[in-house]
Length: 63
Image (cartoon, rainbow, N blue to C red):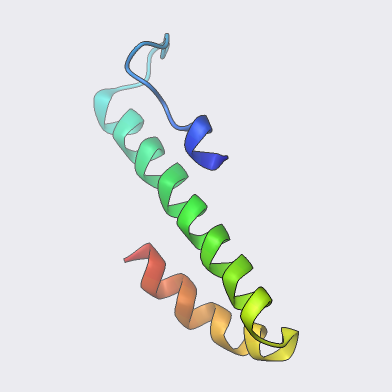
């Protein structure tokens, strides 16, 4: 549910700039994709294989 933490236009954002809000939105959605990918990796592979693949997967999803 990291997407739910992303800033929404109808919320009060205090003194955050548009760029800061955009960065937070992107960060929340990227983190959610990483979590889902990590969960799938753990589900589909052994834990040791998941550790080996995690760094590459993290770079790919963050891009």
